[in-house]
Image 1: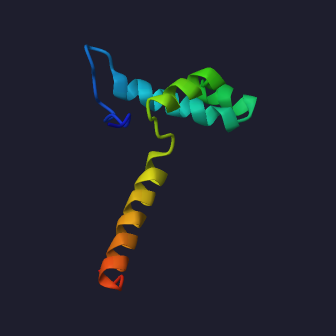
Image 2: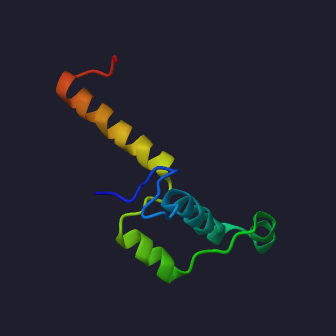
Length: 86
């Protein structure tokens, strides 16, 4: 399994997808200045919250993870076919 739920996903009436999007924003807030966090109305996630989310398999940067999966698929193709002319 994985913890990358669609943005509009709901579980038992709970908007899990939008909540997860907010958790990712709060994770990113850990690297922001206080002024930027205030402007964006974000509170950084605690270390404990980060740990708990990572335990269930959260991917913080979905785009980077997708890029890596596609790259590995390309690598497998090149290994098998001997070229990247796709």
